[in-house]
Amino acid sequence: MTNNTKWGVVAEFDSAASIYHAAEKVTHHGYTRVDAHTPFPVHGLDRALRQGPSPLGWIVVCCGATGICLAQLMMWWMNGHDYVFWVSGKTPYAWPSTIPITFECMVLLSGFGAVFGMFGLNRLPRLHHPIFRHSTIWRATDDRFFLSIEATDPKFDSRETVRFLESIGGKHVEIVEE
Image 1: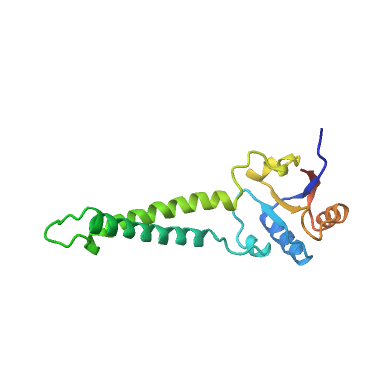
Image 2: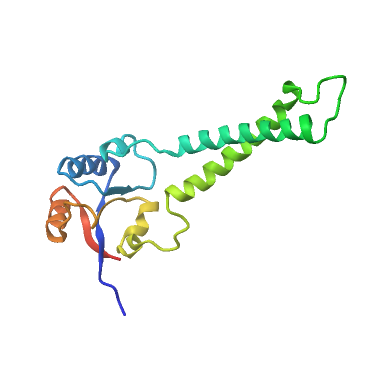
């Protein structure tokens, strides 16, 4: 049984300049669910696609702050109350002695936040994506640039979107099914 639900439309472009200008035209035309697939980063393309900054930095900062708080709480409990131990005549919970472990816990939780936050934001692991059904998408890792417009875009119309992408210089414009 096959599912013929449309995922979107994908168009191929020859150069970084052509995909940059196509992205500007697509977003100016009112499309919002647009993405670019390029063999290398194209400067300013995220701005042309009107993509905001990534929330990953805030996830990492929150995880790092959580690591600091948990480390301090753990050492306050262990060294100050649970197992009081005097070292070199210092009080049981001497704050300067907790800095190395606090730093390590901050780095550990920040690293976990970065990895798992990236997986969550990118909706990974996903072993297959519908865009791989496009006939020449494999060239995105070599020498071609692709622009995709998802069918969930409010302005999406399969015929009109294909015509529009062809009019702005898209080649191999194909409707990709889910």
